[in-house]
Length: 129
Image (cartoon, rainbow, N blue to C red):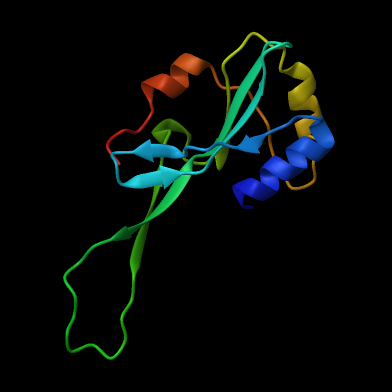
């Protein structure tokens, strides 16, 4: 599933308002990660949605006598300890998430929803990409 499709479905079924950020997450000035925000200052809501998995091109020596050219890719995770997770929603507020998690678990394209302690994510955030 693509992140824009996930944002649309979460907005539709969970009554959220995730919109594409003007600035994607920039990693090492090389990789850009799609980034969505849901912010409502009057209600104290501030969430971020981003992908965990990146497919990057691996530069290798080119074969000059090859009939075909192939691009080698490698999958990396922003949060190494949770490689199995495709997307994260980061909570930047004290808004209750139990209702959101319950509604998200009923969306057919979402297989599992669970809460990860923020210190667990920060300690494992992969900045060596």
